[in-house]
Amino acid sequence: MLCYDELYILLIIRKNRSFLRQFYNDVVMEYNNMIQAFPTNLIAQLFGFKEAVFFSIEDGEDENIRIKF
Image: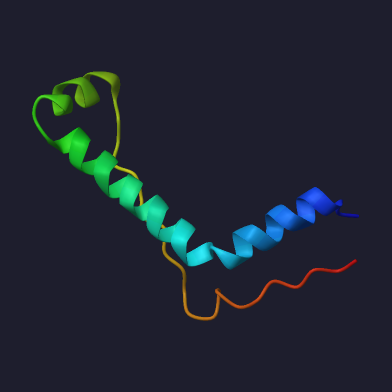
C-alpha cells in the first residue's frame, strides 16, 4: 500500500511527464554534444564515455497509469 508521500510523488510525476521527458532529452543532447566537442572529447574517449540514448515512447504507451488501492 502506498503512503501519502509516495502517492503525492507519483501524482506529481504523472502530471509533469512531458516536462520530465523533455528535460531528460535536453540533458542527453548536452551530454552527447560535450563528448563530441574538443577538448572534452579527448577526456570522453580516454575514459570510455559513450553517447546516451534519447527517451522516446511508442504510440499508446503514454496512456494513463492505473493505481490500485
